[in-house]
Amino acid sequence: MSAVAIGNAVNEWHDPKNRTFAAHIENNAFRRIAYEYPACPCIYIGQVDGLKILHNTIESCAYSGVSVGWNWDPVSYELGESINIRDAEIAYNYIYNYMDCLRDGGAIYVLGNNCNRLSCDRRFNHMHDNYAAISEAGTFGGKYGYYCDGSASNWEVSDSVIIGCSIPIFSQPHPLALSYHNTFKNVYSTTPIHNSAHVPARDVVTENYVLAEEGEEQLLAEHPEARAIRDAAGCSLII
Image 1: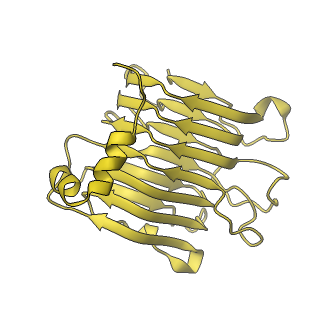
Image 2 (image 1 turned 180 degrees about the vertical axis):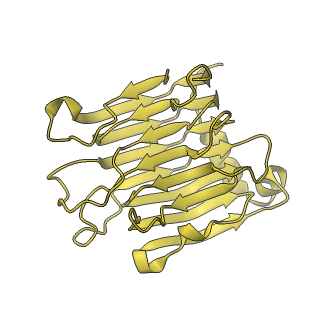
């Protein structure tokens, strides 16, 4: 019941049928996704080498807006030997009223380690210029914004807006699935930062987190760069 589903929910890159290369999901409009089967994200991508999810509009979905990757455990393989997520760009998406039915998901949710953390500290996956909002702001647990779960590493999240969710940015702190080498910078939000998102000992760093607790109207009025991100996000289709 996902609007788009590419790849399998397994950690088996060695099997050719589980390998996805150069996937592009661009300029689509999705509305009211997966309410009958709410465990499905709007856009699901399994293990992938080369990915662009650009200029999509998602309005109302039962679970996460975008979900990419698989696996929970740390990995020891070097970059290129196996793939979970490599060379991904998720950008210019407009995601409004996600997580309507379930918790423990996000506007953009990524899962799984991508290479040996000891030998590779590059940020080769990118989320940027995304706008995500939940219309009823509050502290309901489990509604995340930009969510790096289960060892998810090597991400740069930048120049994005997140409105009204309980945990706007997150980098997994579970001791069995620690995330490494993630950067969050120039993120604009209406809710305070979560303590998982700035842990320099794991090379998880937040820079220039902009908070406007009075809400979206204040945020956009005081920060025209946040308004520009909102205005540039989404598809070009008339919906």
